[in-house]
Image 1 (cartoon, one colour):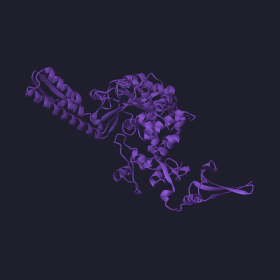
Image 2 (image 1 turned 45 degrees about the horizontal axis):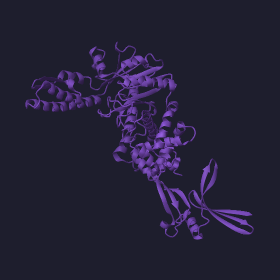
Image 3 (image 1 turned 180 degrees about the horizontal axis):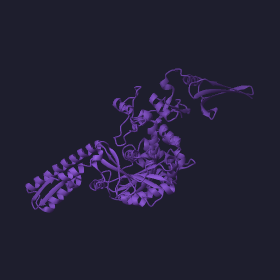
Image 4 (image 1 turned 180 degrees about the vertical axis):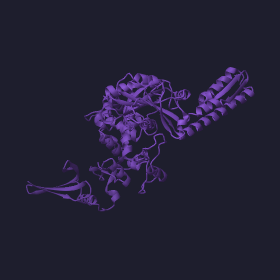
Amino acid sequence: MGYAWRVLKSSGPVHLATIRRTYKGKEYVSHLLRRSYREGNKVKSQTVGNLTALPSAAIEAVRAILNGLPVGRLDQAFEIERALPHGHVLAVLGQLRQLSLDKLLATRPGRERALAVAMIVSRVLQPDSKLATARGLSSSSLAGTLGIEGADEDDLYGAMDWLLERQPAVEAALARRHLVEGGLVLYDLTSVYLEGSKCELARRGYSRDGKRGLPQIEFGIITNADGCPVGLDVFEGNLADPMTVAAQVDKIKERFGITQVVLVSDRGMLTSARIEALKEVGGVSWISALRSPQIATLLKEGDLQLGLFDQRNLAQVSSSKFPGERLVVCKNPALAEDRARKREELLQATEHELDKVVAAVAAGRLKSVAAIAERVGRIVGRFKVGKHFVREVGEGSFSYRRDQAKIEAEAALDGFYVIRSNVAPEVLSDQDLVRSYKLLSRVERAFRTMKSVDLQVRPVHHRLADRVRAHIFLCMLAYYVRWHLERKWAPLLFRDEQPPVPEDPVAPARRSGSALEKARRGRRPDGSLVYSFRGLLSELATLTKNTVRLPGSEVAFEKLALPTPIQAEALRLLDLSPSL
């Protein structure tokens, strides 16, 4: 028996191979459709279809098409059996795998891991309920790429339960990547409302969503100084912010193994009582800020001299009420103007509503002291400036006026804030303390992204406490992937590629000139478009994976659409290739 084979040259990775065999004096010819791929330093081929049974004219047509030649009516030469959005899946899943996040979930491939990865990717691509997510898996190439075709919502719920068990190990791995000994750790807390009232974590508390009538849960996020998330905890909806701090310190020191840490948290979290408790824990430094009444006390007792800020906007002071602490006072004129404007708006809005009460009392519609007081109480509770009004309520009478002395006393401290810390000056200067505290805006950015249409952590539709925890953890992992994507895609997005670090830490943050120009023109210097994050995903989704079939034949193969220049650049920035 003799063999001879010939590869017909064609463009792209798909080619037509003709193999000839001689057996007992008779020649047998096979026509195979093959795909070339690289494995290490070797180039290999994979047979994707056998065209031998086709008429010779059809084989010649395939050969011509693979070489880019027109053959008859091209619209009848092939049938596109299906076209699935693929580019956005390629980008997000590719970034997830480059981060080895799938391997952090489980070192070995498995169905639960694939389902968890699918939920993380779907949360970035199109956040939705688990039912809608399950039904939408087949509307892109995601299900086929991960090998989870046919998965339903029950499969996703099972994967959520599996993922929650992995949370401690995943967080510890992320901490090893992104936290350093003696470095800054940012921590903040937010709330999200729930649908229904059957969740055991649901409580009515202070709502940061403005949903005071709905039950809620709270969750806190730990990030590094850059705002990259490494850990998350979910709490009952009425737990006071300071009560969550001890658990985070224990997690950082015990589970993450960080022996020396500088915890940065806001004034509502690190209260004086919490700080006193932290002093008992070894290896923990902290950076926070004073509350407004504490700043007023500094002024009253003479520890803060406003005249210090006639020529400068930052000064260090000391106070016997805060022994062993560094107090760095800052004055931001822009913040002062903003607070004065908001206060005046609230005062005017309150007066507008109080005037209605005056009119109602004069008309006899409100008569009793209780009824008048109840109406006035609702108004001052709504606008939160009741302390700035003197109110007189009597039987069938009501009057009010502004308390100008209190207003002026509060206005004197407009624009002032005080950073408090026990970090030594040789470790962080006064300016660096201010910069470090301002880094909390990066955790706030994480909350905004997770709670908005980008990742839609809210509303929470789950009832079981562990499912709620798993849902929030999934959203954090999705933000982890998105955080890295945004940094790599910065040249294509409406964001700074290298945010400037102002010399004056008190001055408001400014965008770079290049970012402002992108925002103004909507274009990059080369004239190409600038995108929002979601807009870029939509653009990538038009890069489709197509199942192509010869009419009347079982022969089929997959082929990607050619990427546009912006799609090619987006994938290049991720070090990904637009290939199958």
